[in-house]
Length: 199
Image (cartoon, rainbow, N blue to C red; front, top):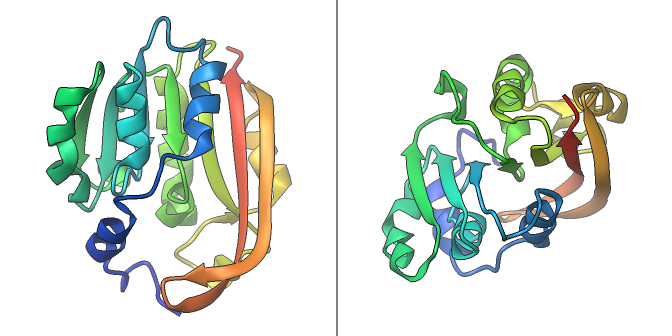
């Protein structure tokens, strides 16, 4: 099986460039109050940028973070947006402070920080949100086939709930099924949480 270090993220992101934005974008915007007063979004692990670009099309200012720069080549699309995307070509773990934001958004990425870096990054992301801000994120659960890897954080539901102790959980979905990652078979156990910060 490919490990995160061996994955050609540029090729993977280029292949994903045409995919539509996830439905989680719309639900996060709704939870944050809708499009009437768009604010700032942090998109961690923005990849090819489908979700970042959709936030921007709806008027939001996006800080998109990724260690691969595929998204940078697509930002000419900003001309057709009411919002904007500022791309940060960096490792998320190396960001000292994140900008204040109304939405923190991350799919299939935070677990790749690993069990050591994830807690520190999580604290910074929580600190970036004001009261009422929205967290829309995926975590890998303990049934995921990457649970055997020491460089990926796979979390039991109880630990995820503890991380959201200062939030109201609005919605949660669980993907627990066999699938693929690139050319390899993989069991996905992905827990998606949409939550609003209480304090």
